[in-house]
Image 1: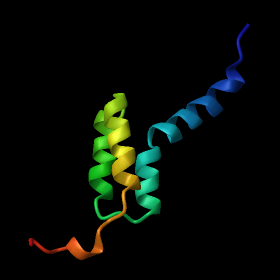
Image 2 (image 1 turned 90 degrees about the vertical axis):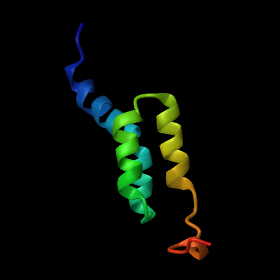
Image 3 (image 1 turned 120 degrees about the vertical axis):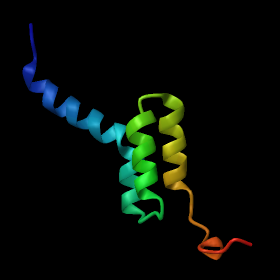
Image 4 (image 1 turned 90 degrees about the horizontal axis):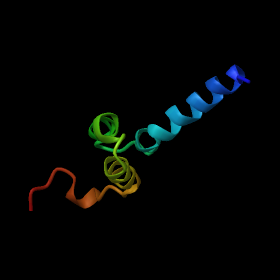
Length: 70
């Protein structure tokens, strides 16, 4: 017995879950959104890469260090 009607929702939720770090970074207007997306895209399939991207996306940007090299 096949349930073809379940494939699109499960595929869609899996796609959203896989790119969750990128979505969070975009929603929070992170400085490194492109870097987080690339990490998520290329290494998100590994659990470590996905968790690193998620933590990076959730981390608060330090406004005092923006543009300073001290």
